[in-house]
Image 1: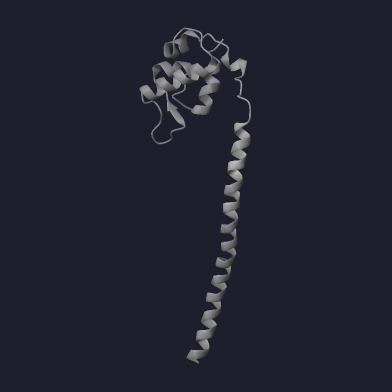
Image 2: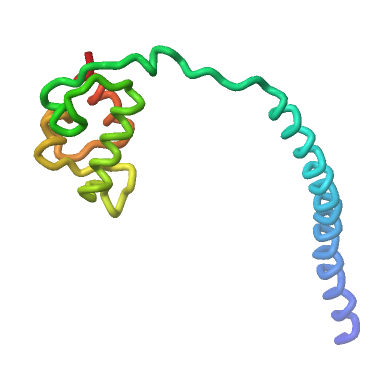
Length: 132
C-alpha cells in the first residue's frame, strides 16, 4: 500500500509544474514590450516644445496675510506655490507621520483660515483665496 500512495503524491507535484509552465511564456512577452518602449520615446522626442499656460504665468498680488509668507511682490501662482513649499520645508512644517499633511504655524494658520493642519491638496485651494 505504501507504494500505491507514492504515485498519488506525484500527481499534485505535476499539477504544481503546470502553472510554472504558464508563467514562462509571460516572461517571454515582457522583452517584446521593452523593445516597443524605445520606439515610443523617439516619437515623444519629435514633439514640439510645450508652451506654458499664460493663465498660470499671470502675476497675482498676494493678500497681506499671504505676503507675510511669500513676500508682497506680485508673483505667478506657480511661484507662490514654490515659495510656500520653501517656507514649509525651511520651518519643517510637513507632518512626519503623513507627509501629505502640513502642520501650520502662526503665519500659515492665518493663510489656511485658522486650520491647524491641512493636506497639500487643500493648501492650493486655500492659498488661491489670498491671490488677486
